[in-house]
Length: 294
Image (cartoon, rainbow, N blue to C red; front, side):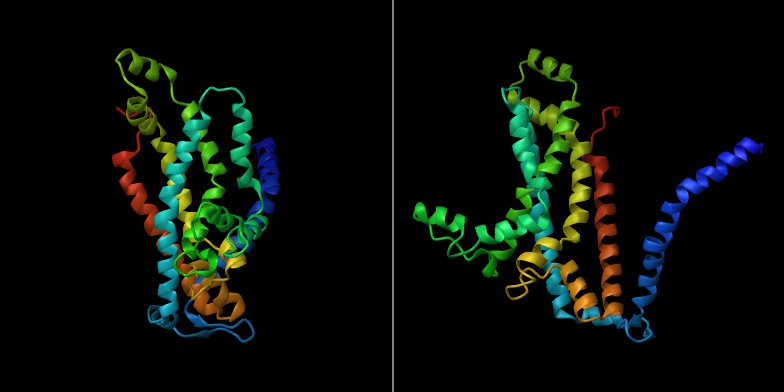
């Protein structure tokens, strides 16, 4: 190895060292320690006490743990498919060649850059059962609005609606995918007599499946870790109807100081996300179409 090569290697290591140190100190070490703490009783104040799999056994008997899993799965099952359908539909509309389209794209994208805390407080006012704008509009057309965030039956649907409001980020990705589809395919379909819905079903959606696949994976990961809006708007209520898994994990760690218990929950969450992601990856060979596939 020449002196120049050695100097380049040393310089490269020096440049990358802040990231390596940060990754080891802030990611890898907490990752490994959380696994150890998951087998202990640890309250931050006293030293951790090794208890084996006791935390995991206790979790299986914890009714609130299962409630949090149900709430999280409910949110995931409804919010992820709805976000894909609405995101693709909006992208199709915003891909039309009409005047002022840049303005419309900006309007639909803006909600996704609003801070979550600010948007959550806004929706808290909109969903107010007595003075909120949504129920006032429903009352104007003779419909009595539900209790929304104060009603256990409507609290999770209300949070799903909140999530759909900020769909602009995913919509932009779908829009980029639409613009990457070769126009020659549409022209050939038109020559064969295809109408608009034929082109959507047999050209647009198959060619868009890699983008849908990406957003599906990101949506699953995000929905399993759903926390901020529920923490700000409902704090898990009413009657634990919005006590999502990440919120219950947070409460155990930073409200009750059951760090060992929370670490066990974190590892179960990690395994659940890995399992869901692997299932989607395994199924992708059947429905994801790439341009180079034959």
